[in-house]
Length: 74
Image (tube, rainbow, N blue to C red; front, side, top):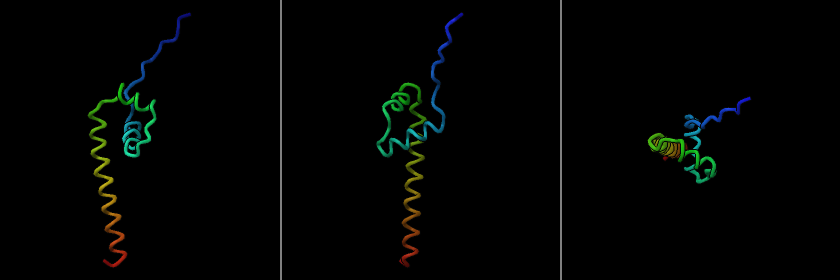
């Protein structure tokens, strides 16, 4: 019998990338996920996702403020 082949972990998927960026937003990234991101992930993916999610966050806050102000009659 031969020993089972060890598969090297592949690059994290899109959901793992988004989860890592969101965890970084809140500062709750686990050590295991951080190590995975630094060893298997591409920096460009995290940078792009960080920028996109920051813009989405700003737009959501802007929309909530506009909604509250319109409901308040201001």
